[in-house]
Length: 163
Ligand code: DLZ
Image 1: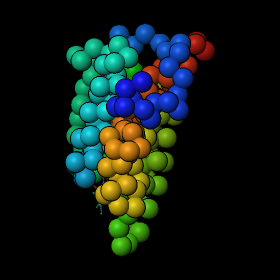
Image 2 (image 1 turned 135 degrees about the vertical axis):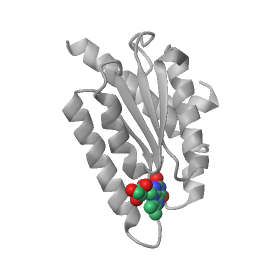
Image 3 (image 1 turned 180 degrees about the horizontal axis):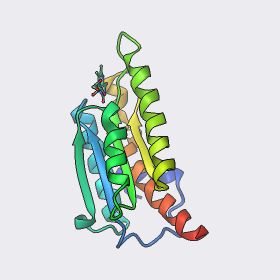
Image 4 (image 1 turned 90 degrees about the horizontal axis):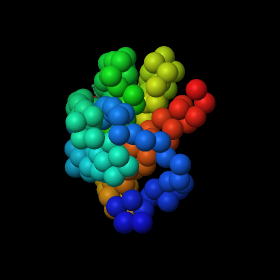
């Protein structure tokens, strides 16, 4: 397994679905852009590695992680989108601002997924500092963007299996 995909070792990569005709929206928060760009690269490359076509992957930026839920519902409601992957990084600050954002996004993305009956993936890092974030965005703990993309692929496979 390549080092870029080492965090995917938590997943079995057997029996993955054919995603060559699946369409994905990748929504990326602009706050902490160094981190979220690395998450995007990881997610994008993982989708390509497992068979998605570049022309089937749409990217949209939102200002901050709080806006991920709104971006997610706009894309998940579209008939031509099969899964939405949301990427953000909320770094702990001196106030509880991060807690409010994290809870709102987690709840918001859950609601979007249940409302639209599509995989909506929570690819949001919630680290204490920038170093912890970079460790999880291509650093020593792998890239959680890869993991978010693999989660979307797995959920599409599960949905296909149970139909
Ligand atoms: C305001 C804010 C703060 C303090 N920190 C972050 C952060 O670490 N990561 C992030 O993605 N967004 C942050 N934001 C912006 C909010 O997500 C949101 O964009 C604003 O509150 C406007 O709704």
